[in-house]
Amino acid sequence: FDAAFASGRGDPFPRLRAGGGYGRLVNMWPLLALGCLLAARAERYLDVGDGTRHEFDFPENTRGVMVVSSRYRSWRETLRVRSLEPDVLSILNVSAGPARSYVISIRSGPAGRAPLLIQLLEPERGSAPPVLVEERTEYSIMVAPGDGGGGGGGGLAHFSENPVLFALLPLIFINKCAFGCKVEVEVLRALLRRPVPLLLGAAGQFLVMPLYAYALSWLLPLPKALALGLVITCSAPGGGGGYLYSLLLGGDVTLAICMTLGSTVVAAAAMPLSSALYGRLLGVHAALHVPFVKILGTLLFIAIPISLGMLVKLRCPALTRVLLALIRPFSFVLIVGGIFMAYQMGASILADMRPQMVAAGVTVPLVGLALGLGLGRAAGLPAPQRKTVAIEVGVQNSLLALAVMQLSFRRAEADFASQAPFVVALSSTSEMLLAVLAHVAHRRFCGAPADGAQTDA
Image (cartoon, rainbow, N blue to C red):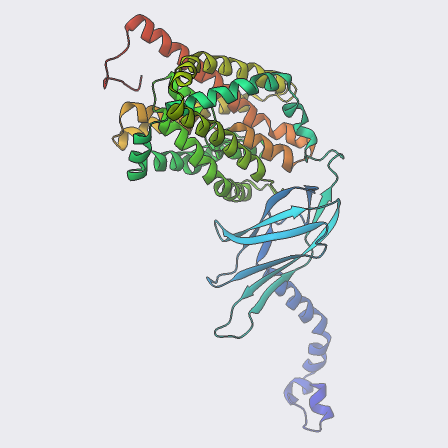
C-alpha cells in the first residue's frame, strides 16, 4: 500500500483508509507474518525416525541405515541426502522404503558430529531442474567412539572370545563338510525347476514372522527396545542349525542347505527394510546397523565347507563314508554345546528377564514350526520337505539379530534389547533338542516308518 502512495497512483483502498482499517491492517503485519511461518511449519513433509529427535547416536567405523519418512503426496518425489561432514559420516545410497519412506545407507568414520542436508525434490518435465519442495538442516548424526560405551564392538567381545566357541569351531567345520556329502544333485535340479519350498520359507521368515513379533509385542505389551529386538530376531534368516535339525528329524537335508543359503542372501535386503518399517511403527528412532559383513561371513562359512564336502563325495568315497558316520553324533554334540554356550554367554543379559519376554521367546519357535508345517501342507509338499520348511521358518539366526542390537545401541540399551534374540535362541535350541530326543525315542520304541510313510509327527 505504501508503495502505491509513493508512486503517485493514489490510495488503493480508500474506504479502508477512511474507516481507519488501513492502520489496523498495517499493525497486523507481524501477526500475518507469524501465521505464514506457522503455516509453512505445518506443511513440513519430512521426518527422521518418529520426528521427536534431531540428533542420533551412531558407533564409529560402522555401516548402517536410517529412515526418513515423507508425507508429500507425489509419486515422482525424490530425496537427496548429503553429509556436511563427509569425513565423519558418508552417505552410501538412498533407496525407496516401505510406507512412503526412504532408507539411507550410511557409513561412519572417526568420532564427531555430522550435520545432514535433507532435500525433498519433485522432478520437472523435460530437462528442467527439479523443484525443491522442502529442505531440512536441523538433523545430525553424533558418531561416538567405539570404546566410549557405544555398541561398536565392545559389546560383542565376550561372544567372539568364548573358549567353548573355539573348541567347537573344528567340529562345526567337519560337520558342515559331512553335510556337503549329503547334498543330492538331483534334488538341487528339482528345486531349480520348482522352487516352491524356497518361496514358502522366504514368505514365512520375512513376512509373517516379523508381523507376528510386532503383534505379540503390542499385545503383551513389551518396551520399545525389547519389541524391536523381537521383531529383528524374527526378521533374521534361518539359522545354520536348520539343516542339522532336518537331518536328525528326517527332513530334506539338501533343501535345508539351500533354504539357509537363500534366506541369508535375502536377509541382506529384507532385514534393513523390516527394521525400517517396524522401527517406525514402534517409534524407535535409532539408526540401526545391519551387519552386512557378518551376513557375508555366514554365507562363506556355510558355502565353503559344504562345497568341500560335495567335492569329497565325488573324489573320495572312503572319506565320505567316514564323514557320514560322524555326522549324527557330531550334530548332537553341537546342539548340546550350543545350548551350554548360549546360557554361559547370556547369563548377565538374562539376569533381569521379564516374564513377558520369556513367554514371547518360547512361542516364536513354536509358531514358526506350525506356520512352516501349515504352508507346506497347503502347498502339497511331501513330509520331509514340510519338516524342513517348518524348521527353517521356526529356527532363526539369532546371532545376526544380536549383532544388530549390539552395534546399534549403547551398551546398557544393547544388553537390554539383546534379551529378545537370546531368549529366542535358547527357546528354539531347547525345543528342537526335545524334538530330536522325542524323535529318537519314537524310532527306537515304535520302529522307523516305512519309506514314503513319514508324517509330520
